[in-house]
Length: 314
Image (cartoon, rainbow, N blue to C red; front, side, top):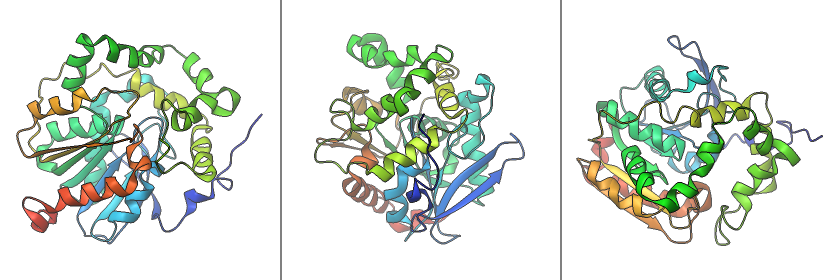
């Protein structure tokens, strides 16, 4: 029997990353945990993580962008130290989108620079579609526009095969068991194996980093909360609205084992503003952790182009 404690994952308490904060949203009744850095009142840059991650996946970006932004990395509902609703229906996509709106408004802003990876990318796309006035610029890592994904998977047997885990995750309890046995070996392999993990030239997870992930997902209900996102993946489809009106930066790791690169360029069809796509050679699905320096440089370039620094104003 393995045990993981917050003390053994000491990097979670690294004060250089920011301050741990909590907010209870009145409408949903849920308590959310987030880590914030940078001066209050500076433009908000909000980070949404993917599966199986939590706020800690943005540690490199929290350090990088706090000089010019109020940076906030959220534990989304069902993850980390945020509340884990018991009902699978509590993870419908419309609830997840509303969570983002509630958090932005609680923080005292009416708009933000929104950054999402994987599942956080899906929610970021949908938030930008439904609340365009609240997104100054949209930055998405290794996640296609939802309509691109649904269209592509129906005509691509290879992508359907790569996404077969989605159907496995629909089963009750068994996916939780498979992901947690042998001290979460399957979860560890996602980040470290040759086929799906961070590449040889990437910024590998340290033993302390991995311990942080194991601690987060060893908490009661943590895996079920995360998997319930997949159990509601079809709750918002087909989209009635599809167009993105904000400027968009899409970053894509060339070695993504789960999503085919052909989908990246197709996202252009749904963007009614400036669109920049950067394919990062040799990078995996875990892009912001795999190649943080390249990712940060590309984000800075995108933030400073076009309207320039005046777009930082809220």
